[in-house]
Amino acid sequence: MTYSNQPYRPGGFQLMPPAIKLIILGNVAMFFLQVSPAGELINAFGALWPIGSEQSGGLPFMPWQLVSYMFLHGSFQHLFFNMFALWMFGAEIENYWGTRQFLTYYFVCGIGAGIINLLATMGSPYPTVGASGAIYGVLLAFGMMFPDRYIFFYFLVPIKAKYFVAGYALIEFISGIGSKTMGSGNMIAHFAHLGGMLIGFIYILIKRNDFSLSDFIDRIRSGSRRKKGPRPFRQNRVEGPVSETEINAILDKISRDGYSSLTEEERRKLLKAGGK
Image (cartoon, rainbow, N blue to C red):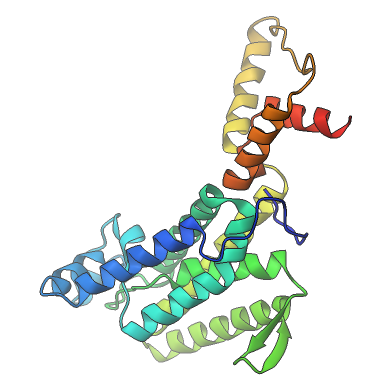
């Protein structure tokens, strides 16, 4: 997986890649349900209610709300601008990372934003809805991947992505602190936005260092085996020539799921083929 700025890899650019399409369709479908006769019930149990909100006249927090709140929106304008930003900044990222990795990142940012929001708003009577936390994580990823790419603010003023993202983060921080000081319910959205950016930043830093939870667990297990007895022989070399069919299958997997989805053997085959 690529978490830095570099040219497109082979495989073509999709204007509406699968994950973006799936997320947009899911949000639009939920918005139609929100404006249906069942909308009041969906909003009540799908919104992210702060911990202890029932003591202030709200409803109790439930674990599923960390996911469901990302698919609910307060108005058509809220939905439209969130989905437009998701497509504008997210399509290019999904084309780089692959669908599976992009979906993982999106939901990690959204759920992480929800958790941070819960910590910042305990006891508040105001619920949170919207995909903004996850989308601010996508915006952060765009700024880190393409820091010198120009974004036309209001379609007129060119600003480099790194300054655009930094400016948005600063505005959200100031707005969140100001809203909290004045006791406004608007603080909820601001902290969700900042939470999405923070979680996205941590996630990308971890991935840039090639950290994998499964690899970490494997290292712990292999370490415990070495303490108990001799380590079994492990074949690390790729014996024999690597066929063109194998390489094509590996490249297709990278295009679909990102480089990090490859097994150790597939990575060695790719390196061996590149060293011919």
